[in-house]
Image (cartoon, helix red, strand yellow):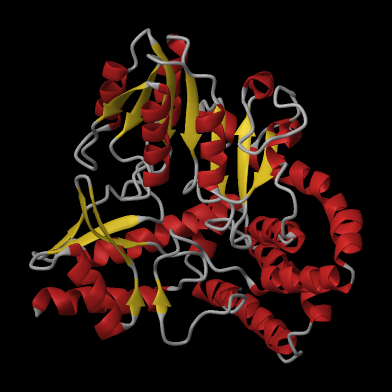
Length: 438
């Protein structure tokens, strides 16, 4: 049954692939409709629904076709999708189409046509985030979102903020600037991951979350090593003493299925050009409705104390083409499905990590349990610095990664995305074994 299904869809995809990649093809639902059709055919096979997902996660025929929907380099293997992810061809085409339209008459098509698409887009992003559309604004990246919050909070000299040694540098620097400028006091949680249980992580935060704390900054998924922090448990500690929470969701949005309210976030920021595969320079800020009026916008608006989330979008001229192409990225994400996407990313991580972890000179320095990490994972090879290992992977094997030497994290971060297939990871596995044995 499954082999027949695959042959049928391969014929269909081959026919579609023979059509030139012109806008008329990519604009149509046929650009992603085969994904839905393929999944639907799986659902009709006589197995349990759980098995449908489990089988599809391992179906390389399906994922090879997903790979073909990206413009992947034929030579360089990109395993640094944590920094910024490529866009599917349907998203690239949408951006180019909108950009060409804008250039026909910029002030007309930008302000009178494409600008009208922001509210429907806001509604769709809010749906994915699990929030009200009146709590979501569209910005350019996580740094802009979180720095809007950090610099907009009404904190005074002596107010205490809990941060962590593994927070992202832009956020750490923003808090340091507030401490320097305004005299707030930073209380830093020291984490040693993966050598701490979730209970120990929560305990470390609990020691710093005293009754006089105003804000607790929580990195949901640590960019350095892929570790998932128990955000809701930490947030509950903060709320118990009357503190507000800021959640950095740069690496978890559209990667994990958690909705923003489930994280205990009062404020939240993320990038859409990472796991959602939206155009470069797109992000989202979330502020609880009752807190919007108290938060100053980073860029001045007519009424800085307005309770309208749109005051955080007062950027002036922006790329409407970039913004509106987020819609096609949402379509692509929903076509695959959040649950299947997360399961596939878990599968890819476990596939390569299990294949190298028993080598005496190779250390996987991320806890690979599904509750503790997903796609991001750190690997270390004895005898190499992180920089040397990353350099050798690139020079000798044309595998692009990122080297991490930060706080107590050292190694090379491996970050596949949905367009990565097992054959790609076999190349990584072979490379790591070769370097470990040299």
